[in-house]
Image 1 (tube, helix red, strand yellow):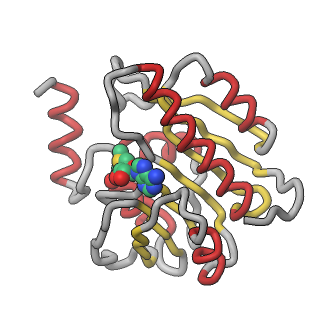
Image 2 (cartoon, helix red, strand yellow; image 1 turned 180 degrees about the vertical axis):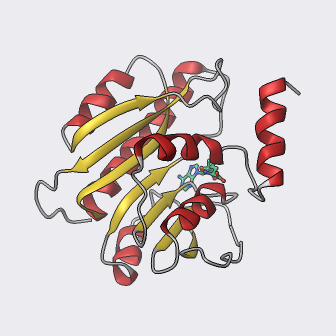
Image 3 (cartoon, helix red, strand yellow; image 1 turned 60 degrees about the vertical axis):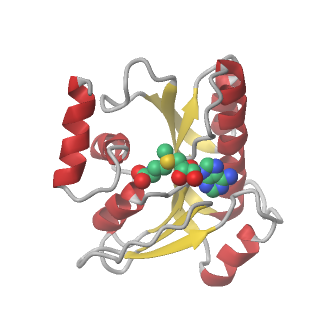
Length: 204
Ligand SMILES: C[S@@+](CC[C@H](N)C(=O)[O-])C[C@H]1O[C@@H](n2cnc3c(N)ncnc32)[C@H](O)[C@@H]1O
């Protein structure tokens, strides 16, 4: 186990998070403060649950976190955290948007750590990752409140700059972030969009 991997792995264990990936959200939050108390947060690709747990801690009681994943997730909401609702869904499922709208009138923040099963082909993994983040951006367009925030993981590749431009069409400010807890050799980076500009009421 590499030294930095070991460090974040043990830190996550000590702080009761099921995955070290939590620090890729924590670092961005510490710097940019896009999660705020009492908000509603949608977490796409939430399993095994670290990002949802962390978001629920930051937004606290009175807020809500909705975690969506194709894998079943079930962790009791810790004390003094926002309520966490776990949904087992594919983000491409037609009924997802209607199911979410039935229960929540929109979200202040959408976070997505979704990742495809990697194939070993950089090109294929990049394209699958782009498909997931574009779906996340589409969901943001349907469910984010005006001025909301979007933080997503994407595997870099030749079409990455095009995706950043697509984000710029929806957000007042867009930043590309490589957290220290993300391995240097990993092609993953994170895009943070703040100041969501609602263009028109879109149908699902
Ligand atoms: C890196 S993990 C997320 C880790 C999580 N953020 C945490 O901190 O615990 C990526 C997740 O994306 C999910 N995922 C991939 N494709 C998906 C899809 N089409 N719909 C929903 N979830 C998906 C996977 O099942 C996997 O659990």
